[in-house]
Length: 242
Ligand SMILES: Nc1ncnc2c1ncn2[C@@H]1O[C@H](COP(=O)(O)OP(=O)(O)O)[C@@H](O)[C@H]1O
Ligand SMILES: Nc1ccn([C@@H]2O[C@H](COP(=O)(O)OP(=O)(O)O)[C@@H](O)[C@H]2O)c(=O)n1
Image 1 (tube, protein in one colour):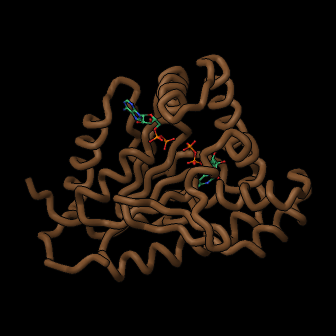
Image 2 (cartoon, rainbow, N blue to C red):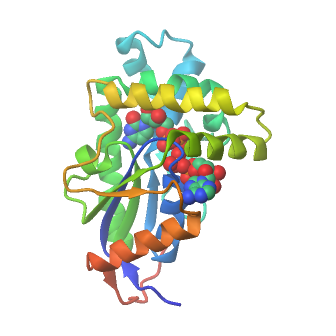
């Protein structure tokens, strides 16, 4: 069934394991739109910082590495790619070393300023090229795209989120216990929600969507309904996406 094409920006924010990435990608794909994974960008900068071997607690050093890095985040929902200094780092940025270090790197104000500027540039290009984009992260509705046509704050109980993450880790060959995964999820949520710069929070005008008892199809259906209710669907234009 045709759903029409997305017009404008859909901002999805929320903590880890709520289903943002999976469903943002599907939503964009279904609606002929672009998709931006901002978490992948913070992860790639974190990888650069780890490779450089600088002290994570030294914001000036972290900023220096971030400024020197060349980051290209693709927006094709069928194949979301992340290139750091010309190399594909899509697998490495999901590893435990990066996951452990990403919150402190993301808390550095200059790193956020650099990435927010790049994210706004990518969003503007995508709107010109495709008419619509689904952007996913922690501060999209509050900071990156405060004028987004639809903002959704995606939540789920920490236990449900940890169970999803543990299952995902097992599927990709990374052994992890549920307890350790729950601790990791809670640690990262606490860090992201309490940092001084752009903490994780729902925008005042965001719709809150609790995915605890929904499967992915249910979450996608709920989002499609919201997009439609907000009048963001246009008939396909025959535009060539490239
Ligand atoms: N509603 C859901 N029901 C079942 N599994 C889900 C649901 N949402 C996400 N998942 C699974 O949980 C894992 C984490 O989802 P992901 O989209 O990466 O979350 P986020 O981007 O919010 O961290 C993935 O393996 C995904 O398939
Ligand atoms: N817009 C964003 C996106 C991610 N992040 C940071 O990047 C980390 C990784 O984001 P992610 O979306 O890849 O995390 P997962 O929920 O997929 O594990 C988060 O824990 C935040 O610290 C951020 O600060 N702002």
